[in-house]
Amino acid sequence: MNNLTLGDSNICGTFNKLPFIESYYNRKGILLKSYSWLVKNAIGIIVLVHGLSAHLRLQYLKLNVNVVNNDYATLIDADNYYIYEDSWIEEFNKNGYSVYGIDLQGHGESDGLDKLPLHINNFDDYVYDIIDYMRRINNSIVLEKSMQKSTSNKYTIENREELLPMYLVGLSMGGNIVLRTLEILGKSNEINSNLNIKGCISLADIFK
Image (tube, rainbow, N blue to C red; front, side, top):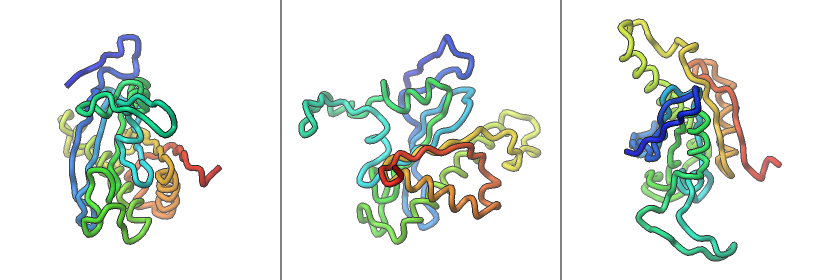
């Protein structure tokens, strides 16, 4: 795996061009694909949410194509279609943030309800997948830190001062999802007690 070193920065060490890819089942038994680009000594967490009929890498990595005009583009390298360099994700990493995201159910490499693309029962199914994913992120960070400490039996998710600040970024339909996520979390102290959300960016035309 290729590493880049930020020699002139004190906020982070190394980060990876290639994502760490995992699969897991959501609360309804649908298999979701997740991606993470991690920074050593990160100052925060960015959770990306993509839009309708898209997927995470399609919207947040750079595409290896030559854009001729708005209607036509030529493929440069099919074996290296998603490029890390000059992408949103690289910029977040360079600024010290670890980046996480999933392909929403029915999108990208995630399964859909009844194995159908773009098929859900309720819009909030997307939202609860994001909430569950954020909790998974924090749990994984807590577990990693606990393994690095001799007092792991005393180190729990309740240690909010140890949690990195988390920021949501949603594009198009993803912008609606992140705002709805905040609405639901705002009504549930139990859920939000396990998170450390400090900001949200909604890039959605509907909210102009």
